[in-house]
Length: 110
Picture 1 (cartoon, rainbow, N blue to C red):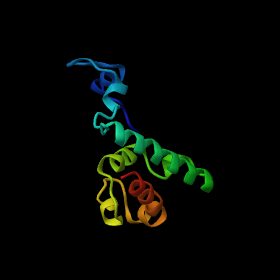
Picture 2 (cartoon, helix red, strand yellow):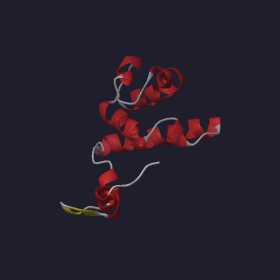
Picture 3 (spheres, one colour):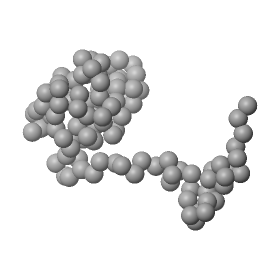
Picture 4 (tube, helix red, strand yellow):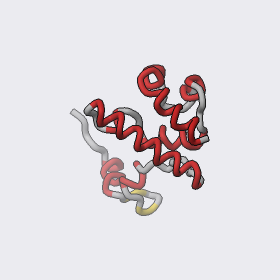
């Protein structure tokens, strides 16, 4: 059995020693990759491709990859499977199954 400590209860309710910090603010991703105008356009195209792939497979889009991976793709613009693998969260299976679709879009955009 698990129990929440009083310190944990304070955290969950937003009461901490450091002032009022909401639970959701603590969980929020503060490391969102900021994109320029051009990279933002590429990000939106990559999201569309992800959606098309997911729809064709009958899957939710997030199961293909998450937005953070797409943002990093839009920022770093990998052109090869090995450079795609260098992105955190991208593995060999993703590259094998979907890599060429995403790389083709990136190559066209660059």
